[in-house]
Structures are given as structure tokens and as C-alpha cells.
Length: 153
Image (cartoon, rainbow, N blue to C red; front, side):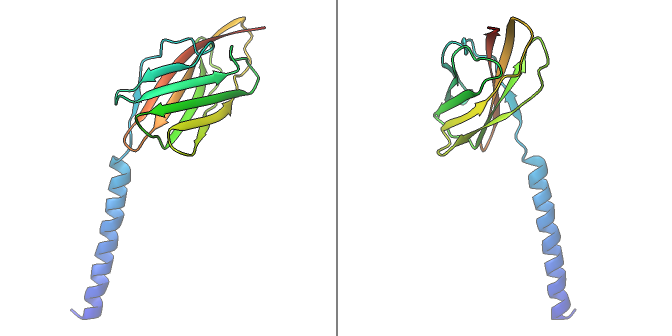
């Protein structure tokens, strides 16, 4: 076999191996979402804190207090004991499907996150919600629900 042909075979085999390894990495290196129990804290009244399975703590705040519908909401989250690459918040109606509107939060250090969100309108005088906070790290995705109730004014 000539040197040129040998080099071509080595290049082709190497390319196929690299593509196969890339596919295997993408296929088998997917993160699994870990659903966590709801946090027992009145989010509409105060900042709420939870501890993740890895020992890190999450402090989540929504303002203004009362969490009014159809008004801009400030979402703040602080992580202690870990960093995250991405955090998003979904507001889900407990008794009524209100659609899914994920709100990604911004960070500059992987521990302090902030953003804005909004609740959709509801015809009930009282509405139960879950704020699902999804925390994505290098090794895991945590889904942490914070229950709260809104009252029509």
C-alpha cells in the first residue's frame, strides 16, 4: 500500500471514530431531571429556602409580595454551596392548566440569578400555583417546586 493511500485510510478511520465517539457522548451523557418535593413555605409572603440532595441551599424570592397576576414579577435566586449553568422558572396552575411559560434567569457568577416573569390571568378568586425552579449544573438537573396562592383583588 502506498504512503498516500495509507494516510487516507488513517484519516478516514480517525474521522469515523471521532464522529462515533461524539455521537456516543451526546447520546449517553444526557442529564436526568431529578424532581424534588415541594418546599413548605408561603412564597407569596416571603423568601423561601430549600436544601438540595447535594447539600447546597437555594433561596428563592418573588416580588412584589402577593405575586399579582398580569404584572411584571422580579425573580431572584441565590445558590450557596454550588454553582449552576442555567436556571429557569415555570409557573404552573395546580387546579387549572395555565400554559407553560419558562422564564430563564440571568447570572454573572453561577450563584446569584435574577430575571422577570409574569403570571397569566385567572378567573378564580383564589388560585393555587407551583413555581417550578429548574437548576441545571454540570452533573444534574434539579426540579424544585415552590407552591403559592394568589388572590384576585
